Length: 219
Ligand SMILES: [Ca+2]
View 1 (cartoon, rainbow, N blue to C red):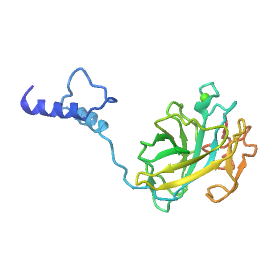
View 2 (spheres, protein in one colour):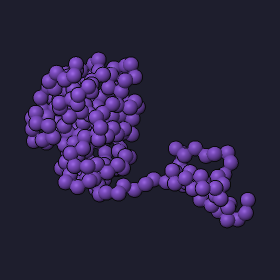
View 3 (cartoon, helix red, strand yellow):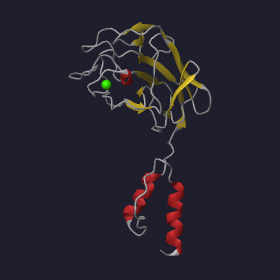
View 4 (cartoon, rainbow, N blue to C red):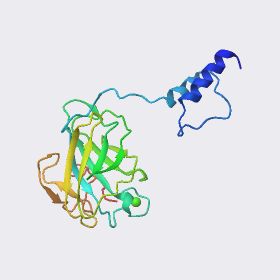
């Protein structure tokens, strides 16, 4: 290992964190594939600005799944809790670095840096939830913590990376297998109502009403 090669390899070691699994052999820096390996290891900054105050609408919350298997793992448990957001910015924006709060307790950090388009749906679930089927153009984002939404009701708040509130929602006592949803889709000032029957269930997490032809939700 010559000195330049060794310096490159040491820089790779310095980049690695606990989540970076080291290979037993150092990569071949003369191989184009090694550059891909290095590129995949480096975080890519979002190509848009952070979401700003009031640009996120809490549109729907499923706090008590009680029979709803949102992630399709065959179980209906607290991991199926979910929150639907609508990005209401007029320009693309991202949620990377934002934190979800339930009352005064932090419920996770968003590490997803995707640029959201105006009106785009986002589904937030806890860190251990499996993939959730959402409509095209909607985005499923995992938080770095289980949601642990209280059945008795709570105030949810998304705090942006700049320290301001992106949006909030106070939901009342959760109803089994039924979400609370804005009476007017995407309107942060609209009252919450119990979700009407929809595609065999009583929520539409990740789906705008009405359901696309042939699509199902709540499975
Ligand atoms: Ca499940």
